[in-house]
Amino acid sequence: MFSKSLMLLCASMFLAYAGQAILTPIIPIYVNRLGGSTSVAGFALLAFAAPSFLVRPILGPMADRIGHAVMLTFGVISLALAGLTFFIPSLIALFIGSAARGLAWGALNIGGYAHLATAAPPDRRGEATGYFYSAITGAFVVFPALGLWLMNGGGGPVAVFATSFAVTAVAIPIALRMRRRELADRRAAPPEPETASAPARASALNRGIVIAMVLSLCQTLPAPAIAAFLPLFAQKEGLGDVSMYYIVSGILIVLMRFVLGKRADSLGQGTLIAVGFVAQTIGLIMIWRGHTLPIVLVGAIIASIGPGLIGAATTTLAMDAAPPERRGQAMAIFTMTFQIGAGLGSVFSGMLADLLGVRDMYLGSLAISLIGTIFLVAVWKTMPRPVR
Image 1: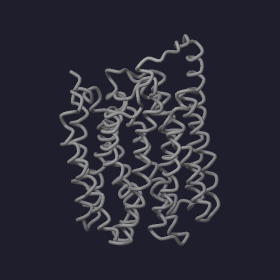
Image 2: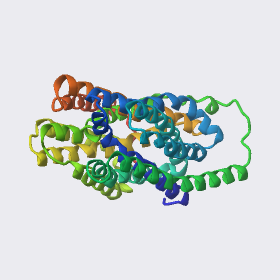
Image 3: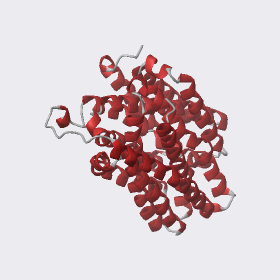
Image 4: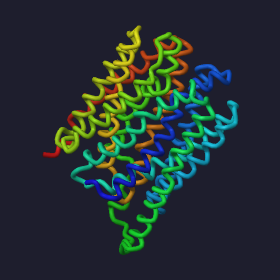
């Protein structure tokens, strides 16, 4: 299971996600410091998500041609370089830098998720995906709290952006090593015969991918209300520092994935998604109704179990449904849900906060979570059976 290819992939994705995790909670606060409203903060997050979403249908087929690790390497290098624009203290520079990083983020995730589908054994994809998600979730254990600490007293925005750049840059040599290994494997592999067989014409978008996407969207759309807006919510409500949420929730999800381990495939992805939606819904209710820091923190931590379970389970569903010869394209389509969630979810949360207030903003997230639960019940009979 712990092949060299999987370990290099997890290390590079961890570092790239860590660089982004430092930025996520401080963007709304930084926009406010520059004179922007909560809605502007939502659009700033959309500026990152939209390009990543739009570019995936183009980069997906390209990744199948040039190599998944090659695409990942391009994404890591571009992500680091684009972050340099943040050192210019203006909203225009923030939007330009966010858009450039969004393009790079699309390449990174297309390459990373497609490479995961190749590196994971077919009968243990749930387990491998769990470890992969532990790596990228691990980035959110310390780094968002580090970003908030740097922003509020450890050097300000410049220190945040410098740290994000440095962490992302460390991933570059790891990604280059993956690229060399993949190119060597491609040269050593015998050429595939040109055929017009039915599998070669298999669509990258099929019923299994669509189901995985809908379930994923019902987890990603509510996520920005917590991951990005929780510090601003706590600030406006006078609750205090919520940095501990990122640390505790990150540790909890990483431990949870390792405890599940091999049982992820035997339990079944449908069961994991169901538990995830229940936890997400309970947590959002606690945040919405909570008026003290402990209740809000506990609610946010419980809600974080949802993405930890649903994200890995829906990714496994998508990998199982993806045609092998179009894995890059299929995973590019599926991972569009991450950017739809991050982008539209951010704008949706920001606009609700301006219209209803930051507290009732969480009603929108709660409604989406309930829709996901209803949809899961509707498609339950089509869920793949657990591996025994």
